[in-house]
Length: 233
Length: 233
Image 1 (tube, chains in turn brown, green):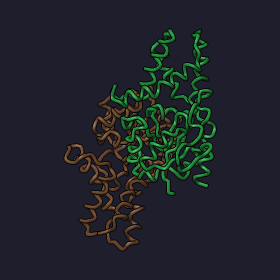
Image 2 (cartoon, each protein chain N blue to C red):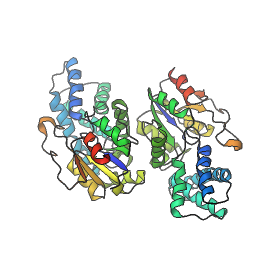
Image 3 (cartoon, rainbow over the protein chains, first blue to last red):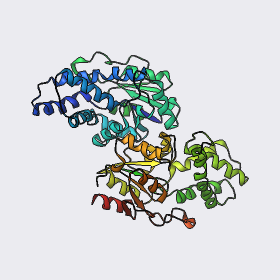
């Protein structure tokens, strides 16, 4: 098995979005005297993610990057809670998604993997989001690959095949790494190798799926450090 | 002056393509008993660069990335010299452009600049070329920005404006860094800040231009380490 490049799902697989957002937003709203259930807001914000991408995917709205979708969802969620904040504050909160913290194994695992492979995100996050996140969290990406470059969101095939084309590699020489079965199944159908990473606390108490691999994936690993040992010995 | 991101021309500004190619190709042809003037081949190969991009720019041929243009030019140059080599060898030689060495100041300069700014190539090289070059030479890019992402070559405005859009920055918050006046003038016309770096030996004994800045650029620096001190103190 010759894997030249590893592509990583980011939200949930590399970074712990739920814990990061709750930790940032809780003091932010408290300092401003807003009465709000922050974990519920965060869960609802993430819950709006797939439906908002589906509207783009079905052509009901023109291409918009994930920052624009996050912002629209935030406005809706705040309005439903009767909370009115400034434009600058809305932009600041939307960029909380740029400031997510990696899981503890992510930086050491990616650093080991980068010694022998090209490592890149393949995420629905925007190029600017992924770039800022990597710089802040010191994620050692070799290149930033984003849905934004292809004008399509995962799990559309254009995203995976577009990444392979830019890397000038056959899908069989690329391993998609994710904590989500549907992401891996979409890549596998196109000829990519696959690695499932368990992130059973991604959704906190609300996790309902992705506790275990549900496909015949190339590798299954506990985390990204474990993956680095399984892949490179 | 608030510069958030620095975009770098690569061939000539960050890497020394001429010395690198001559150093790699000279023993390669000698070991295979080919009688060939390697410096002349390298200069002719580079000389074919602008005309090949112009054919794409004028629409005389559909979009082709720089690797494809390099390969076509190589085939023509070898044929003119009566040299026939295998397909694998042609692919190997074309990828010599992926293995260029940085100027001595490039890695220390970029590393200092990356401490306070987003740093990225903005090059006509392909995404795969720029990624492989950076990994080999340890260029600390935060994100790889390539003409290939925009389907246009510099100095088309789409390349500069496309980079600004992906970074979600106004051109005035971005500094284009290059050893070539025409690259900087094209960026400056679009509102970018500019820095001229002198590379008077880029073309070896055949250098005819770009010995000095020929515009009212934001900064002029001797090299990338010098730029890092001028910009960040």
